[in-house]
Length: 226
Length: 87
Image (tube, rainbow over all chains, first blue to last red; front, side, top):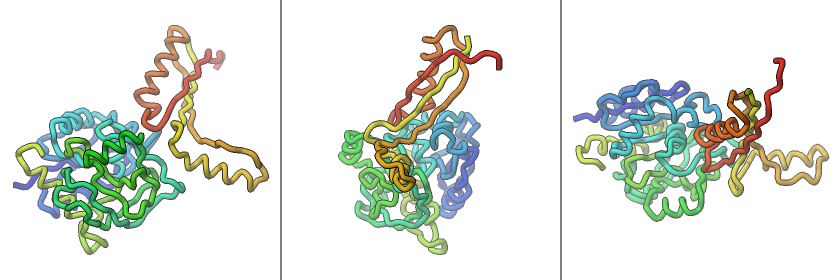
């Protein structure tokens, strides 16, 4: 059965259609969920897409975390449902406290828009279950505030628990520990700055994101919590 | 009573501040030598109705904790003063 995926659209999101298209091409039944809805509907997984939710005012994700949809999203995540935050979605998940740390202005103040090699750091997440540790993926990044930061103890525990799911091979933004993506302890909530949906066809430069999205959909299909 | 509130948000010690570093490097080009420790933060100003100054301060502090600052990377300083009259 094709998993149903809700892709949340905030005012200022701009990657929701790309995500829907990429997931649909992999057999999912993906639909857009408005941020003002206080119900996710009958979904097996949720994606927070990239963009500039609420204009990134104050801080990226700072206002989005109070959107009505975030209440049901939090419950869905805490119940073990697969949740993926891409770029701005990652920022929203950290602001909401569903993932540790924060995303800061890139070192060098440069908005990075390029395709970078990323190395799978852990397979213990809904996003990376299908990719062995050490797999190198070419993934597009497109952000001005993607420099991951947290305190040393948090980074150590992320490393020790296999929560650093993706690392930059050549750090483009000054992220601590070369972190490109992390998961929560249970592995069902994942945030990453690179855009797997923009690497979902050779026609657009890379299909390396398919393994990640495929893993996410497999988790969504599984009846048992991941 | 109405109070004028200014919340200054700045990065925590040890969190890199690339904007501050860039400005610090730019200053000598204009002849301003000797500036160090440049940091860029932001100020959120607003007026607030509250019973008294401690109440205004407490409310502003709650705003900081819940929205205005991210404690993972920032700290906030609240300054409360009586609002100017005759606006």
